Structure formats: structure tokens, C-alpha cells
Length: 220
Ligand code: URA
Image 1 (cartoon, helix red, strand yellow):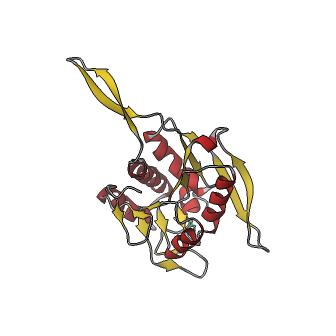
Image 2 (cartoon, helix red, strand yellow):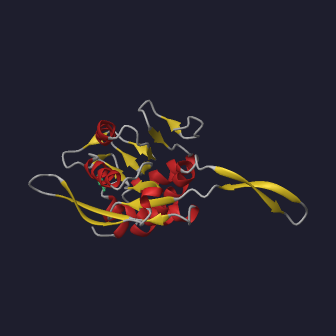
Image 3 (cartoon, helix red, strand yellow):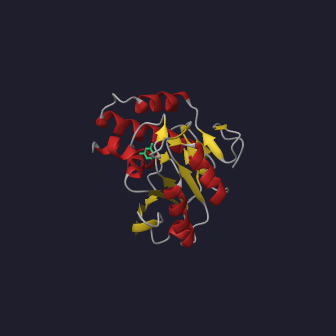
């Protein structure tokens, strides 16, 4: 990744903690257990939009001609980069709207995974990707990088489909998940709003924000 990125580069290779004050403010509101489902959903969308700004910082530009009400001039526009957003079901869905506010031309794929209770292997139960996904840069969305098992499995499935350029965006990462990602896919950048302390015995991130899916959809 380009070091000119405004995001603070942590000593951890390829981990970008987006420390913009608005992102940090909204992350704290999301952590607060008193935040309602409605507010939580809105905050996830807002933070995702702000994160999208940094994640797309390296999009190529082309020079174009433009005519203002006063004069002909030259400007810059995004040079036709094909993007796909791929939320991991279900919590990743909460991040899609914020991102598409800024990159409405992105196609959207979905991946659903569950963990086999006996083998603990991640099993893909749903996968629908844009037909030209192998020509697209993929932004993978899953708000909580806990053990990293799900994200590592999802990236494996994406790579089987010949996708070369993948970025992973989460709200909060745990060191255990970052390590797992580094062991399997050190080349894939991780963008997060917070890098937390550890996992508890149930693989919840501490201090974290609880179960992101339940808080987004009001299922608890
Ligand atoms: N998934 C969540 O939603 N929260 C965590 O803390 C860990 C995994």
C-alpha cells in the first residue's frame, strides 16, 4: 500500500487503523451499550462511508475536459476502475450502504459461511458474485475481525475465483485475527477503525462492541 495514505500505519504490516476524528467519535458511540439498533445501524453506515474514502484512496484518475459556466478547463475523474463490494453475511450487510453512497458504480456480491461444529471448517452456504468478479478489485466487508477464521475462509473462496486484488475492511480487529490474516494472506491490506486488546473465551473482541449482527438487526 501507498504510504501517502492519510491513515495511520500501525507497526503491524498492512494494517491501517483509520484514526480520523469522525471515525473515532462514531466508533465510540457504536461501542456504547446504550446505543439503540437504529442509531447503531446509522453509525455503521456512516463509518463505512468515511472508511470508504480512505480505502479508495489509490483509485487511478484520468484527465478529462470539462466546461464550467465560465470557462473550459481540465479536471480529473476516476479511470473506470471496476470494483465489487462483498459483504460476508450477515453483519457485513450493514457496511454496504455507506460504501455505495461513495462508490455507486460498484457491483455487490454476497458470501455466507458457517462453521461445521465438528470439523470447525468454514463451509460456504451462499455465494453470489458479479459474473465479471475476476476483473474487479474486491472490497471484502465484515465488521469484526475476531479469530479471522471466517475472513480467511472467504478470501480463500474469492481467490479460487481468480480475484487478484482484495482489500478487507472491518470496524474492529483483534490481534488474534490480524495474526491469522498475516499467516494466510500477508499481502491483503486490513482497514479498521479500531485495533482492540484481545478475544474473550467465546471469541468476542474485548472491549469490542458486542455482537455486530445482533446490534445491527436488533436480534438480541
Ligand atoms: N463477532 C462479533 O459480532 N463480535 C465480536 O466481538 C466477535 C465476532
